[in-house]
Amino acid sequence: MPVCAELMTYVPDPPATPGDQYLGRPLDLSSAWLADLRASLDALSRQPTGREIWGNRIDRYTNLLHAVFGRPAPADAVPGWGSTEHLDLHWGNVTVPNLMILDWEHWGTNVAGYGAARLYCTALAVPDVASRIYTTFADVLSSPSGRYAILVNAADILSDFTHYRDEVGLCPALHRVAAEILS
Image (tube, rainbow, N blue to C red; front, side, top):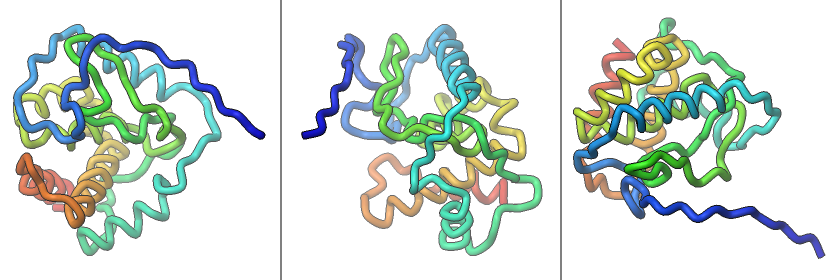
């Protein structure tokens, strides 16, 4: 009988949004927290892996963009494939006031900037926090791959809201961000 063992570590700080991935209230994120997040995602992106998650592939993203926005990504939003990314990075998977990144079953090769774009998109209902995330990752998120990652994450989250209620009012902000990239 196969057995799987996981090494678990007690995390004393709570998730930023316990039980939810979308940020709906302001957070006081320290400069150190943001610097730790940036350093962590930069280090992760450089780790080589062949791990792929079936739902996070370029063919799915192409179909997703067509289904949600009715068109492919524009020429200035091009996926830079091959970065190692946390593919479920949202506010229920980061702790505050000290940063710990949780929930590692979805990680692997993906579009460069995917994790930062996911955290940014899930914060858009709180513009001040979203702005701080964008500023922290401006070089990544404003790149062609980052723009593509934002567009894919916006489409993915909007498609989720066909099954779940948008409790924090995220849909209008996601549509605005996507429209800016698509125009």
